[in-house]
Length: 290
Image 1 (cartoon, rainbow, N blue to C red):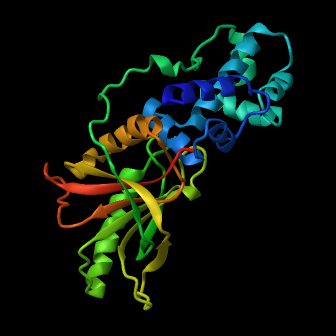
Image 2 (image 1 turned 180 degrees about the vertical axis):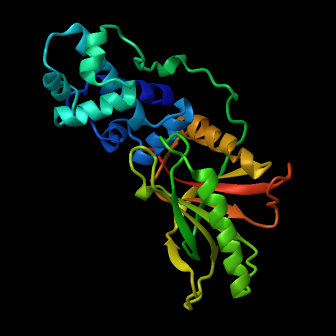
Image 3 (image 1 turned 45 degrees about the horizontal axis):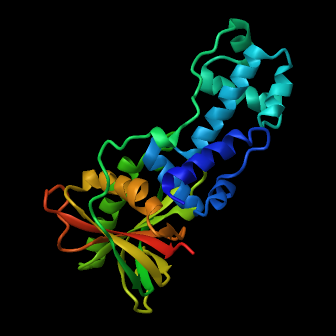
């Protein structure tokens, strides 16, 4: 099943399950993706999370019902998956800037979020022009610092503030410990994220399999895993283009799917921050689609 067909199926599932909304995990399972791959692919393709789309479609249908039907606000709230009128009113007001009763009194539809048609989406940056190396990498023990962040596509993204600050703190700590690792690892842990791509965990770390601990650093054990290893060439601030190409174009149309495990960033002597020839490797944990 190609990516567009999966996304079309997702859209139809959301449209057919307004009263009892499906979880992101259930939607992902229905098309044979991991929860994280659906979140990543949807955000890369459309610029917002699947959870945001689903919520706005339910509220848009509720808004149309307010104008077209004489039923009570409570009945409409229940018909579109809200537990009570209070929670519906809060979400509706946040979305439309008017309470449900005020919206109904106005009598005209406004700010309705349209149903997506993934088959009509055109790519602004073209198809991905790189192929990853698929390889099994042994497990490793990492030591470092971690933080949480909200990813691009979330209601309140803060990755550009939280992650550079973490790396600066990590570098300061390396100086205190008199450590100069040849390779550093960024680790993106999606398991802590909610459906709005918030509260993801990120590690700045280096590898050391020795039994001793490192004062002030936390230990992270990464298991053996098969990865699709991509090369990002260029300034670090353009990494978003590479990630979009991976999750929008390559992964959903490949013979692989995301396992849901941590993604890795490898920084070695080839990395030079904002230099146009800077290189980092981005490793995506994958398995072949059966």
